[in-house]
Every structure is written in structure tokens, then in C-alpha cells.
Length: 420
Ligand code: AMP
Image (cartoon, rainbow, N blue to C red; front, side, top):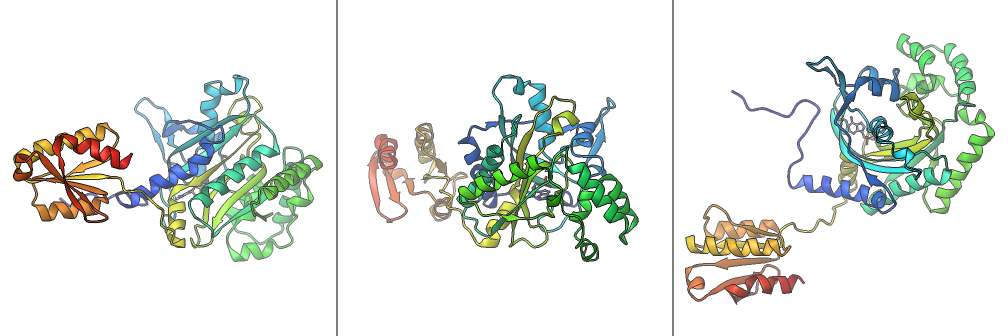
């Protein structure tokens, strides 16, 4: 039998690269945790109807990319293709919005699934860290989220990313624009599928990547010219706030994004080192989503940053994260008695909060020292029969190469002192 491989469009995270993924998740969530966002975790699957209603029946995500299944009990479920609908569903279900503390600010981190054509940077299983601020309409909140995402990327050392910003209008002005756009689009030379899209979600035609379509869109009506005064004022305020924070952005009136629920502020983070899959993250305001999934009116805003593409962006920029060694002390026993004794010391160190590892499997000194080196440990503890007979262990400083005999009973305390 041949060995198994990861399913198409997926890959495994294995050491040492997996440490970078953990560090990226940590770096993206740190600014959120420091800004009043609480952690939320929802199931990996939901009732399919949540996404059909919440993400939009006409979106590629729902029509083509969802992993759906029928359970033995007859439930129609879907592996989650994105986070916002689930998080809002969970917040409503737990009545978080009724606790009198709006906005409800939440962050999450997890796996998402889309049946897409795999290519570099596009996978069928991927990871996102996301944030949602539910129940408040306030341009400061939109600005906060954009600033925190910018801060997260900067803290990782990324520089070649750009922020694209747009406003999609609200339920007053968007329908007027929608109609004007439809009238314009119906006169163009487009294929059947795109013609259908004009009727269901014309804004998404603007997002078409094909050059022959883009060429015909040059004179398309601009949403900017249709924004109502309230939307204009709101957008100007968001722009002014992020500008005041020193965050650089580009106005991109073609930015509509692939999900139906966005209103007003929309933004995308793109990275110029990633080729065609350049979006590393995106988000925006979704004032109507709560009502679309059966909740009360809860204007909200959020974003999701892709962990996979953020790691690719780091690699494209040649940024090496400064990851501290995971092991501080590595123990190398020579002989049976030393194994027992040194394993005792390792346990003692671990209980004292010092990261320690051990040369398992009774290997020779040379091989064990190689492992010690590879572990990145600052100190090695070596003990053979003669050392034990004298009641000592050899403590080797891996940086200076200096080796000293330390009484066995004091080894853990001595190391604690050195790391203290
Ligand atoms: P979206 O919900 O499509 O705006 O996705 C938000 C972010 O998730 C994107 O900017 C990507 O970084 C990431 N992402 C979305 N789909 C995929 C995918 N198929 N593979 C890898 N990352 C993805």
C-alpha cells in the first residue's frame, strides 16, 4: 500500500516552519487582546443556511466553494468558509449584545475551508485570525480595526503591504447606485455568467479580474458619486482618523470584496510580493448582517487576516522572525544510572518553569551533543558514571563552550539562578 498524502489543496504545518505560524497568530492577536477584544471559538461547521443567508447566495463562496455535507440525522451542514457569520451567530445566541456593553469586541483564530482551485497562496484549508466589533456604528471603531491590523503586520516586520480603502454605501444610497450600475452593465459585451451576476450582485462585476471586462468598465458609474451625505461624512471621518494615526492607505473605488454583507467601510490588505493571490487580509463594516441572519439591528465591523499568506509575505520579504529557542537546557546522560538521575533533574527544571529536554534512547555522546546543539539550548547538562560517583554533573555553557562541574543537588538551583 502506498503511503497517504495530505488532501489536494492542503498542507501540513511541521517544525520548524510551524513555529512561524504560531508566532504570526500570536502577533496578529496581540494588538486585539490589548484593545479589549475577547476570545471566541465557534464550531468548524455550521448549518449551511447560515452561510447561504449570511455570506450571500450569489457569492462564489456559497455557490462553488463550500464543503457541504448531510449528516446521518439529515442535517445540512457546511465546513465554515469564513468567520464573521459564525461569530455573529454565536454572539446573538449567547445574547452578548444584550449585556449592555456595546460594541461586543471579539477575536478568533482557526481553520477555514473553501473548495477553490489550489495554487500558490490559495488552499482548500487555510487559517485566519479575525476580529469583530458588534453593535456599534462609529467611525472610530472602523479606524481602530484598520490601525490594529496595520500594527500587527508592522510588529511582524512586514513593510511591503498596502491598505486599500473604499466605502460601499448603505441601504439608502447603495440601491440607487446598484440600479445605475446595472443599467450601464447591461449594455456591455459580457458572457452569460457575468450577465447573471449583473442581476444578482452587479457590484461584483467591478471585481472581475479579466482584462477585456476591465476595459469595458472604464466609464462605469462610480459609487463615490452616489454616496449619500451620511456615508460620505462617515467615510471622511474614517479616513481622517487613520491618517491621524499615521497609517498610509490608498483609496480604491473598485474594491467591493467577494462577500455580500459589506456596507460602508471596506478594506483590503494586499502584499506586493505574493503574485496573483496578493490579498493577505480584508474586512469592513456589515451593518445588515445581523438582520440577515435573524437578529436585531446590530451595525458591526470586522476583519480577517490570512495566516498562510502572512507567512508567505514574510518569506517574500525575507523577514526572519526572532523566535526564541524553545529549549533552554538539554540533558545528556551517559549510562543507565545517569539517565535516571538526569531525567530527575530535567523534571525538576520543568517544574521550575525552565524549558528542558533530554537525549532519549541511550544515544552516544556525539549524537546527543548534536541534538543538544540543534535544540538551541543555552546549557547542556552531561553526566557519566564518574561524575555521579563524585556527586556532580557537568554544566556546559553552549555559547562560551565553558564547562563546570556542579554538585548534582544544586544543578537545578544553579540553572534557575542563571536564568533568573
Ligand atoms: P476573505 O474572507 O476572502 O476576504 O479572506 C480573508 C483572508 O483570508 C484573505 O485575505 C486571505 O489572506 C485568506 N484566504 C482566503 N481564502 C484563502 C485561501 N483559499 N487560501 C489561503 N488563504 C485564504
